[in-house]
Structures are given as structure tokens and as C-alpha cells.
Image (cartoon, rainbow, N blue to C red; front, side, top):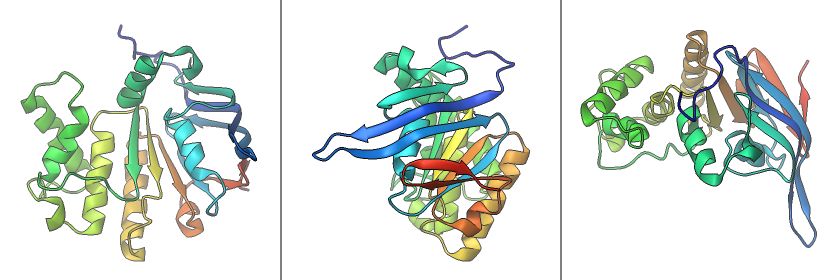
Length: 233
């Protein structure tokens, strides 16, 4: 068993309990205030709120990109406070997939190479990385675009490549930060449908967005304001 293997019957993928994040001043800024949320395996959740609500800080906490001022964050039952920076980095790279508004694709290499980059630190040979990248791209409907460069793809296709990159390592959870922020309404709808399809196949997904119409499409919506969360009715 490796350091990043977890109990098979663990149903809570991500849990935040009493989480505060305070940035030092003067004056100090409270970005998160007593946040409590649990994401179960198989969830499809939208966290929605206006600019300045604390969504970006929450993403950093959920993705183990930063540590809280107070409270606990557990990923598949492991309290991240118990991990060294090196082990935390390993946990993050193995168990969390990230999707961002700006795609962050590497220009000059193909869609397949961009996705395969997500496996570069897994110790896999080039052939296996390529095979897995192809499977991930086919999952998001880009089987015919494997060798296209980013500048040969539409905005929606580039976001699909980014989603495939997040999926390729088979993470426990995918965190998507404003994934439709740079897309038109039609393409946003396609991405929402893609997330629903991936979730139906078993992928646990949290989408952080300011778009209430997008959030309303998902089976669970959590509203965020002034650093606090409340479950939408």
C-alpha cells in the first residue's frame, strides 16, 4: 500500500470542519468564516456566489493549495494538517483534478500531449501516458482532436482538453473554478452537460461559479456569501 492509498469504503471524499481563513492586515481580512461542508463520493455540487464571496479562497482550501487558519480539512479521511508539504503535494497531484477558467494549456503541443503532461510525475512510460491521455480525451468527446494544437481548437474544445487533463490521473475529486467563465452560453451548456455525464459515470465534481443558472443545473447547490456557506433549498 502506498502513501496515497485510502480505505475503499470511505464515502466522504472531502470534508471541511470549522474552517477559517484570515489574511493578516492591517486590518486582517476574514476570507472564510466557520466553513463546514462535506462532499461525498459521487456528488455533483455547485458552489455559487458573487465576486468577493470567498470562492477562490475556498477552492484553495478544498484543493489543499493552502492551509486554513483554523479548522480541519480532510481528503479521503486524511487530515491535511498531519501531512508534510511534500506529502501534501503528492496527495494533491494524485487525488485532486483541477479545471480552471483560463484552460492553462501549453501552446505548441497537441491536445494529447497536454493531457499526458498530467501524468508526468506518475512514473509511467510515454506509451502508457499517451494511451491514458487518449482515453481521457475520448471521454470528453475529443477523440477526433487528439493531435490538434490549442490554437486549432475552439474555446469549448480547449476547456474539454483541460477537463480531460484533470481526469487522466483518475482523481478522487475534480474541482472546477469558473469553468464556463470564458465561454458563450451555448458552449457553457455543453460543458454543464459534460460534467453531468462524467458524474453519471462516477466522477465526483465540485464546480465553483458565480453563474446561478449553471449552478441550478446541478443536483446540489451551496451558496456562498461573505466567506460563509449555506445549503440551497
